[in-house]
Length: 89
Image (cartoon, rainbow, N blue to C red; front, top):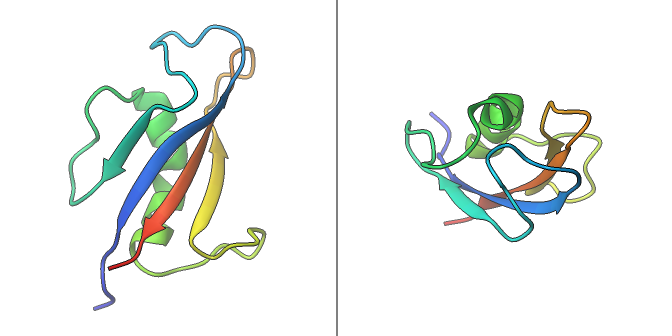
């Protein structure tokens, strides 16, 4: 089984009005199998597949850094952009 990494999530951009008031600089860590407290469930659902790739050592061919991915929430009127970063042990 591949080594499992934690993934840091950080808001890097926010436009409009986020219903949960996420703002640039907000941070969470995905560790284990718990949803980070306070994060929008719709945003979490949108980046969970990418987080799982990073958690288990995978890479995304369109990203320039294999340890970082950028994902946007599904609200097109009030987009929040998240940076996901694999935390190396």
